Image (cartoon, rainbow, N blue to C red; front, side):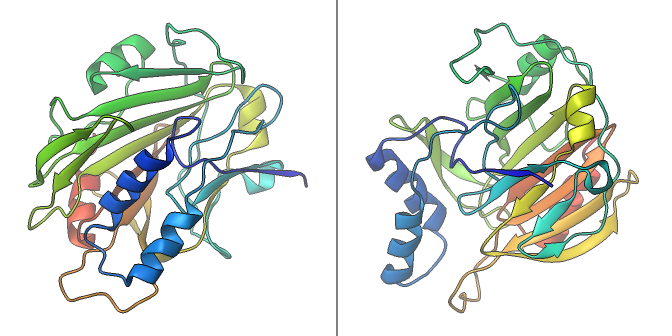
Length: 278
């Protein structure tokens, strides 16, 4: 069975070195590692050009800085989620979703990328119903982006989807990302990713996702709406301080679309967020 591994640190092709350092420093702000460990993490965050997925489908966005995504052939192994060598419990099946193509030019890798100022604008142009949360609101810090081969797949990324009690947002202009101060419940904002299968060929090909490196599986459960959810968290090499809050990731499928929520919150808070997704 042929596999293609796609790893890319951001939804953009690359970042300037200084901008990448600022972003990683922001991610590490609440992680009290030794300077040696922080330097090792920074050194691993290199920029890679996207590779072809299969036919015209182009590179997928990374799961996280140290993660990756894999699309593997074979109907019997469709849409699995793995944490390192562990295959997680099965989620509800992904299905073909009808979506309007974004009004933007196809790039050199045969796919479309476009930014939106709001989640509502994105949904309106694409003409699809995506889950939303009462905890999310339109604000100037939300960053919405789509990457798609309109015949096969689409990846929607919404940074700062839920702000919680974070504050003091400042735009890092060179990388177009925000720094922030953590709150007492939310040590980071919560991001949202939606992964859509658009055609029969991609559906047959499947869409497996690998979380590699500093991750561990926490639990599988059914949400209030009936979604099958896999919950993960990141790990660090050194013993964390008592007030450290790990980054949680919740993955589930609703109406054939796979959703990924990520943020530095408690397990209970992440579950409460999932229960608001309607």
